[in-house]
View: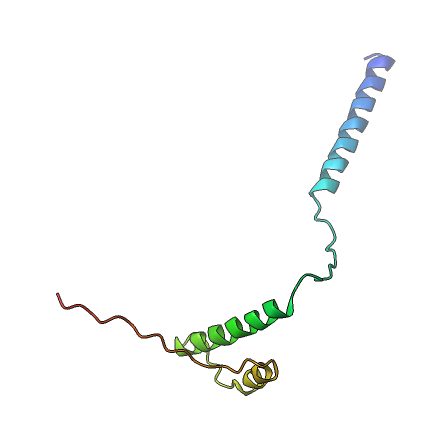
Length: 97
């Protein structure tokens, strides 16, 4: 090999290494960014509290969780002006076949 070929091969290897390093940098996950939630409304917060209380009690009713102390959750809902009220939805009559 001539010196020109050796020099050309060395430059290609350097370019390949640089390209590989760039790809590795792109593959690394970026740092998490802290974002202020300026657009979250009080209405959305209250709706999520309602859904949370319904969901927690539903999981307990289905025996998926064994949590039965809802005192703190009920106090928080009352302070928010939305006490928990269990709504009973009547099921349709079963048709006989």
